[in-house]
Image (spheres, rainbow, N blue to C red):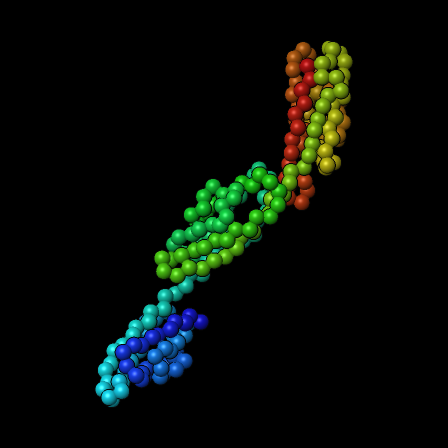
Length: 219
C-alpha cells in the first residue's frame, strides 16, 4: 500500500468525502492508503465555532512504481569480465561500484580481481518513483600453476624434462611439438635444432572452467 496523510487547517471540525481509501472522514488529519496508480480527489468541508462552513479539495496522484529486472546472480573467474544488466526503469544506480566499469547505466561490466562474493544494490528510477533489486556476483579464484625445465639450456641431441606443479591435475602443454606428450605434469622436450623454444602449460578449475597458464622456455 501507498499511504499519505492529509491535513486540514483553519476550522474547528472537518468532514472529508468520499470516504473510500480514507481511514477516517472526520478530523484535521486523515490517512489515504491505496495501491492503484491514479488521481484521487477529496472534498473537505470545514466548520468554525460559529457554524460557518467553507469547502476546498485535495488531489492525490499515485504514480506506478517501476518493477526492476536484472541479469540475476552470476559467477565469473578472477580477471575475467561479465555483463550485469538491469531493466524496468529509465535510470539506474549500482552500489557499490567495486569492479564495475560504470555505476549509472543499465548494463555494466564487472571484472573482479579478488575472489569472493560481491553484492550490488541496483536502484532504478522512472523520475518519480524507484525500486531496488540485488545482483550477486561470485568471483572464483584461478588455479595455481608454475612450470620449469630441469635444464633450460639443452645441448643438441639431448633432452630435458619440463615439469609443472599446480592445484589441479589436468595439465595441457602447447604446442605439443617436440614434446613427449601434451598432457601430464611432466613432459620430455627434445629440441629439433638450435634456438629458443617456449611452451605454455595450463590447468583448469573444473567447476567454472577457470584457467591459469605458466610459461617455460628452453634453448
